[in-house]
Length: 281
Image (cartoon, rainbow, N blue to C red; front, side, top):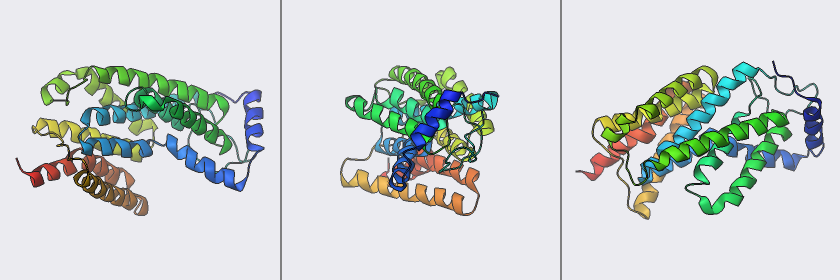
């Protein structure tokens, strides 16, 4: 078990010395930027837009960061800050090192702020720092948790971004994708680790997403891009409405894992299949 260092405890107390009601609300909102579910919505939007490659590798970043951070937590078994000594605004279960939210936002920065959003790198740094600070302010992590998590995620994001560049200009055709055995093995292994050591709901959603991607390829289909404008907007709104309904049903009926799997499948297989049939050959 890795115990917190004295200077980490002192730093947490310093950050929390500025506690206020409006800051609670601000940092609760900021910490959501490190939640993988937030970025999975972007992956879904990209997929339905027809940008399959970016969606695929963005989702892979979320999967790898979640799996690796979850696995390391089981090794370090560092306890989270105790409500007895800290102001815990958002209590969370599990171990503390590394921070999964920090790993996620670090991975996002390494992947999309070098690729999709290159012109927004400074904004990306601000977002990363806000997520890191929010985890300490909310009383769920120590300083080393967020630093190590961010560096871990950043390394994964860079690696995934480099891998994605091999597919530059490609649409992930079935034959070429299936030849990339390393990608498939890495995804399968990460799914297993994520199911064992990460949030089951998010792991199930990503499992459904990747299952759908491969299934669509195996039947010889591709997610057809929608025309820009009203057609794309209608497609995105309909897709998110169903996705939100599935996620909400999972929360209400405590039936999260199966419904999140279906939600992932909806993003990458069910909805694209429906859409392609409505458009015809």
